[in-house]
Image (cartoon, protein in one colour):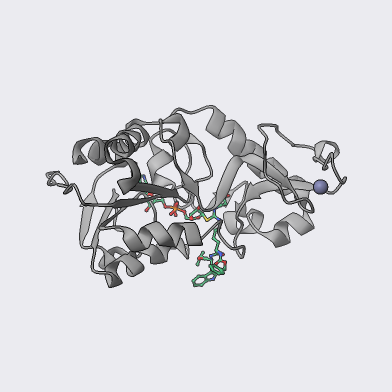
Length: 236
Ligand code: BV8
Ligand code: ZN
């Protein structure tokens, strides 16, 4: 699988968007990979405010399982390659991820924008201040309540129907980028799947890396079919 090295000029500004595919080779299930199912629940069923209102115990068991899974795996060569590229490019590099796992940070990335939230953060539904939290809540009796006001504490995750985090701080670097690189996402969930269309309208180079064509493949100027760990370490 021959692909050309990506030559970046000293003036180039790189915007990188990652999805579940970049963590697949670390052993974390993707959404599509697991058929979008968890315990017989469609992910969209447990990752919504409706699900939380209906059954917070079920939702906390889902995210406690995701916390256990993420703690049991290591970042892979693709995470590490992106951390190296960040070092090389400095502020000419911006990393936005749809992933809630912390493998980018554990792979050495310093600045990572988690547009869909973070697995190891929780927040009180009333106080609304995210705090670090690695605990597991797997029984009704263990459901966390706020120490400050006593209200329920939920995962600091963006669920379907909720607005992604700090979208403006994503669109600014996207508007300044000269190259958009997208890695390991099926391109089916918006607004993330729309970033390539914005980049295309700006006429910048748009590159996709993954073992199969994403749903928005037609919007990319280049599709490099290969796994993240095969392709990313050889790109720069
Ligand atoms: C919003 C956190 C309003 C939770 C997530 C109809 C049309 C268009 C849009 C909508 C619609 N109906 C509803 C919507 C909106 C909805 C949406 O897009 N739904 C889809 C299903 C149609 N979007 C929302 O609700 C968003 N909010 O719209 O608010 C708004 C917005 C903006 C401004 C104002 C108002 C919120 C969406 C966020 C939901 N939370 N995650 C959690 O993690 O539990 S989304 C979640 O699913 C992921 O974060 C990701 O974003 C998405 C899909 O996952 P992917 O990362 O792409 O993974 P997937 O499994 O799908 O694919 C894996 C890919 O990896 C594959 O392509 C595979 O080929 C590749 N791969 C596999 N192995 C490898 C690999 N690649 C490289 N190497 C490998 N080894
Ligand atoms: Zn509170």
